[in-house]
Each structure stands twice: as C-alpha cells, then as structure tokens.
Length: 309
Image (tube, rainbow, N blue to C red; front, side, top):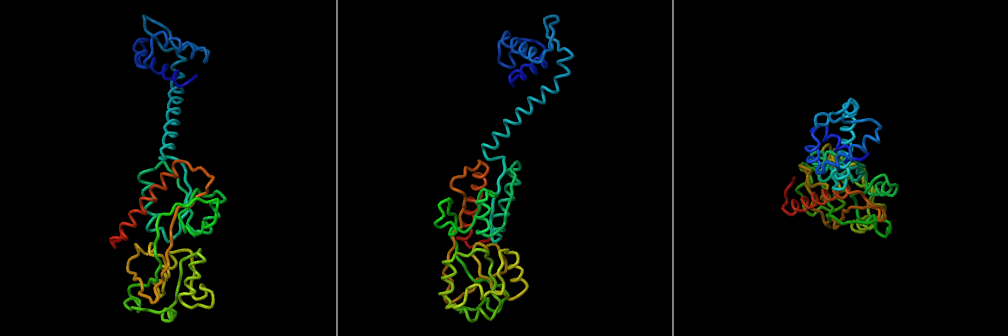
C-alpha cells in the first residue's frame, strides 16, 4: 500500500460517489476503482459495497479509517520534516563559542532561534578555542566561533574569517586610572590585573612580553586568569582590577572605560567559524551560521557608529 491508495480510500469515504471521489483525486473512475480493489486485496477485506449506484463503506472501512488517516498524516508530517531539514528550519546543531561572546553574539543568536526557528534543537558548548577545537575533532560539536589563529597550519580545518577586533586594557568607570592618559605598564601593575582567556595566540603573548619588557612569563603578571568572562566582569565591578580583553567582548558592557596606555596594546584578534574540512554539515548548520554572520555584520556596523546594542 502507498500514500496514493490511502488518499483514494479517504476520498471515497468523504464523497461516497465514485465520480466525485475520482474528481477529488484527479483520476478517472476506472483508475480509482482499480486502486481501491488493489487496496482491498492487500488488506484482504472488502472496504466498499455498491448500493443504489453509490459506494457504502463496510464495517472494515469504518474500523480502518482512523488508522488510514493517521498513516497519511504521518506520511505528510514526515515529508514536512524533511523539507524543513532541507531548508534549515529543523534539525540539530551543536556549536561552540567563548564566554566573551555571550552578550554580543551567543545570547542574541539563541533568542532568534527560539523565536524564528522553534523546530531547531541546539546544543551549546561555552569554552575557549583550544577546548572547543578538541570537541570539534571529536565530533561533539559541528563548528565553533573562535580565534582563527588556532587553525594556523591545521590542514583538517576550514576557517571562515568573520571579524577582526583589537585588544585593550579595561577598567570600571570609577577606577582611579579611568581618566588618566599615557599610563605605563609599571603603573598598571600597582593594581590587580586579570585576563579572560583560556587560549592566547603564542604570537600575541610574545608581542605583549616584548612590548612591556617582561622577562618572566606573561601570565605571571596577572592576579587572575579565567576562561569565564562572568568571573572577570565580577572582579571589575567589585574591585579596581584592570582587565585585558578584546574590544568586542566589552562592546555591550556598561560603565567600563578603555585605558589610554603608552605604549598602546597593538594587538588584533580575528574571530572565525571553524569546522572540519571533510565533514559535511546539515542545512540547519548553514542556517545558524548565516545568523551568526548577520549578527557579526550588525556588530561591525554598531562599532563603526560607536553605539551599543
């Protein structure tokens, strides 16, 4: 039995007239009769009797009606689901992103998915680029947004660069250094310094050590190192800590000031979408990545205008 036979059966139930049912399913009367006879042979029971030139459903037909409608509905629902998966409106996606991107990228993305694509199921891993790369290679996530430099010389990865932003030293607007200009590193070290990075490009580390004349390791000069941006934001609110962070991470953070340092921290970070080269992703992943690209474009536009979301 097939979907067309189920449609023919339902049409006869609803019309009782062979001619009206044939017209409803766009068949000739002989073709519809053959279809119903074939269905009766498959089920091994009579479904209709002819009375006064009309077709009457038998008790078998009436008993089987609910099953036939359910089968037809499941068939149609299955087709709808596949169509939605092809368009990226349904399916499962597992993605990763750093905590510094939660306010600017991740949370708005999830809001959009819940509102506009309710059939999409999302799994989110919040971590820094190195752990996310391990999850990607273990196929626990489909892709992640992170530091594109981590993919340098990695032949198994495809990187789509999205956004290049600078670094800076940030403090609360009430910090004693907030309005000071030409602040040197010795002055900054009189205050607790924190950094939100579980992964830092070795070239960036070398640049900072050279820029500030640090003989010891860079991280030894920070009181707190955390890969959770919520931790360092708390420290900025509760103390006079100085935070080294990307500009995009601070874009929507109220009551913070970027310090005017000398020399300036001339670093950039390129964020990108990273995925495995040989892995074919389902359409839902492309749909989600398109939303991320759009959010990034909005971020760049607001940054150029100097406004917050």
